[in-house]
Length: 342
Image (tube, rainbow, N blue to C red; front, side, top):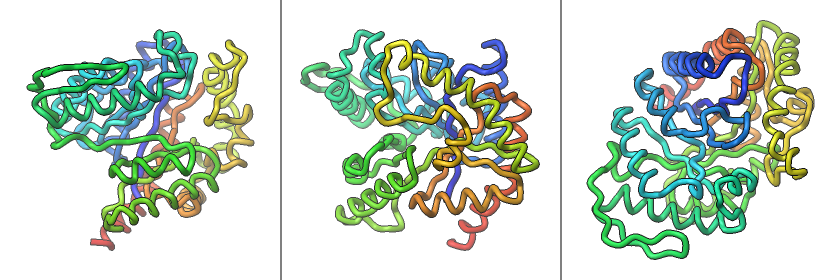
C-alpha cells in the first residue's frame, strides 16, 4: 500500500494569491511527510478548480519539493494541443528531476469542453488521437500522424522526458469495463465511487493484467480516491467535514446547476455525513484513522490510497493538522510493510 494526495484546488477561505502560496507550502509538507505523489485536477470556468493550468502550477511545485512525485490527474486532452502538451510534460519532467506522472482523460464535464469550443460528443475520439500523438512525441524523434482531429507530417522532436521512454501514466476508471485498456497498456488507475464498484474495477484490472501474461509483483498502482478529515476526536473530524462540505459542494455543482444537468459518473451527496456513510469519505481521530484506511483499501482491492485533505472552507491549519495525523498514524505502516517485503 502506498499513499498519495489528490487536490482540486477548489475555492477556499483565502484570496487567490494567498491560496496559491498556502497550497505550495502544503505540498512542501506532503513532500517532507513522505506521500508518494501529489495529483491535481484540471477544470475550467468553475470554482471547483482555481489552478486550471496544471503545467503552470506543477512547474512551481517542482521548485518547492525534492522527493514527492507530481502530476495532473488528469490532463483533459481535448482542450490541449498535443504537441504543445508533450513539450510541457518534457519540461516538467526535467524541472522536477524525473518526478512527473501523466494523467490522461477526455474530461468529465461537457460544459467545460463546450466553453473551449470542443464538441463533447467528439471528445472521446479527440482524446484517443491526442494520446497517440503525445506518445509519439515522447518516445520518437519525429511525429507522423493522420487522424480526423489531428494531423502532423514529419514534425521533428528534440525534447525528450527525463524518464525514458516516458513518465508513468494514469487513467481514471469509472466502470469495470474501463479497466481493460489501462491493464493491457500497463497504466496506473484511480477510482472513485462506491467501494463495491471500485472492487469490480480492481478485480477486472487484475484479471486483464494476468491474461496479458504480466507478473503479479509488477502490478501497477490501483488507486482509490477519498475525502479524508483527521482531527483529535472522531466528533471534531466529522464537524470539520460537515462545515466544509457545503462550500465544496456548491463549487462542484456550479456548472451542472447552471445548465440544469447532473454529472454522469461523479455524483456526490449534498451533505458530508452521507459522503462518509456511502464510503466516499473517511473521518477519524488518531486512534481510528489507520484502521479505517486499511479496511477500505482492502475492501476495494486497492494498493494505492489517495487522500483529498483540502476541500471547501477548511483552513490551512486545519488541513495541516489533518494531514499530519494521517502521516503519523498511517504512513509508517506502509513503510513497515514495504520493509518486510524486501
